[in-house]
Amino acid sequence: NPKSESQYDYKMYAIVHERCSYHAPSFQKLGYQVMVRSTPVDITKDIQNDWYRGHVDGEVCFRCIGSAEFVKLHAYNLTNHPIVVLFDLDQLVLQPLDDLFDAMMYDPGSLEGAAARGRLELEFPGDPLPERIDAFFTRDYS
Image (cartoon, rainbow, N blue to C red):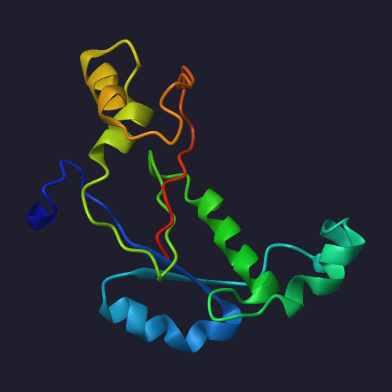
């Protein structure tokens, strides 16, 4: 997308819970590749905490849908891309994420990697970044 001013191209996926599959055509019209999936967690077997197991599907509000939220874990199956960015629909990207991508993809000692790391806004600027960055969590404004 040339208007984004990013050097990176992207492919959009919509990971849709099977209970919401009727939304798939809307995502397809917007250019998403839709992945309709079931919850990848068996609540009765995989959740060990008794309280959470009994309450996870009671945690339904305007932003969460109980155990169906675990459908996001399917993003870890998108291994044919160097980086996967996971957003909920209530999140908004305001600027290119190139510095995040460069910090992850380039060696920290390279010109590109060192420059990207220097431009990152960190919550704890005094803490050193790891040698290899496998994941980032950015501020949630939702």
